[in-house]
Image 1 (tube, rainbow, N blue to C red):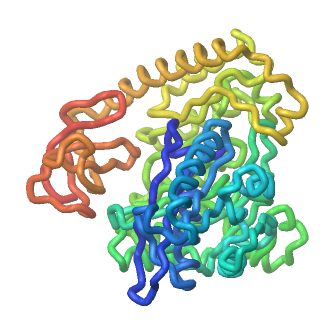
Image 2 (image 1 turned 180 degrees about the vertical axis):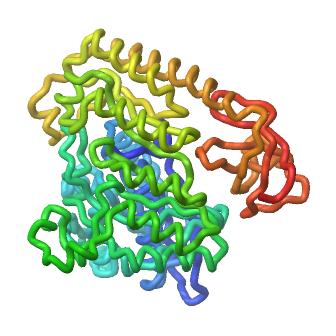
Length: 478
């Protein structure tokens, strides 16, 4: 399951670097996971070369693109409502074109063109390099579709146009696709087989970000721990690689070390990990390098072995707990977050209690928690009846959220009285007199601005906390 930005699946218009020579206006909204937001930057880069500048005002756009998520029904319903809004804009701008990108485009394909008369173009996640041709097609009055999945495309040769929000943090994609066929998940069908990006292109992008003033990168992939570069090709073909290719192959731990050493002043994060693929050398690499943040997003989905098997998760409750123990042993101050699904088909009250007991064992710092949403085309939708009543799903989800809030407060209280390094990202949401940043554990820290600036590392004395936020006072530069 991909990590979703937030439970409300909020869209975000991208304000990106523009070219003075461009005359057409592009408006992009992105929904869902971090990979979608990263992909939108790639799309904007490609279309900059086609004469488009981005805008935050859809009313002045010549082209509207919505980058979609299919991981839950709620996300797709949100996009359909946005398409209704775009239709109202289109009535006042006859030349306006609208395109649907991403996982929803891949899953629904031409159905979007047939049902949503507003849509002129449907483009899957592996087809963005074809956008110039597709834009020309729709300009000539024809609908355009390209949802072909690729076995090679990583967009490693595209320099993404960056968000103009803070200039401090950025996403760097390292893998695409997923080979783990979790029964609830559409990602393998919408993003294709797992393939890794050339480490040299990753290092080149990280180095470029440092030169431009960025001070933190998040290495992105549906399953970063499966990263494996041996000269190209799918991970599944590694056994057929030559002896030299195998000898010089770079796994995820090796990539982490290369990035950390290339820019020792830059913070390194990564997301998302899969428990079955996370190896001890990754944890040891994290412990070795100061600039690799002490935080792991480690989705578990359920605490019940029976449900984990039904989900086709390739780990048991006991294996997951042993991995947690090793993380705590090697990195005692490491923060861990979760994905959890309430009400998966056939889930009993006993299964639910197993989930709560696993949460009690781990005491996650924070989490992303959802009620099960059947996704058409997945094995769960084909083979399992969605038999948990909606009221039961909501009640179990509420209990999971309430327990997580308790554990979140327990974890934030552990920071009280400590002095921690914080990277300033921007204004606090609640006060322009305060900065907001995050510590190594990915916890939000708020403190008075004083003379400090965005992009600086400062030491903050933690004095108060909520279940999700630390409050303190800067005591000097880090």
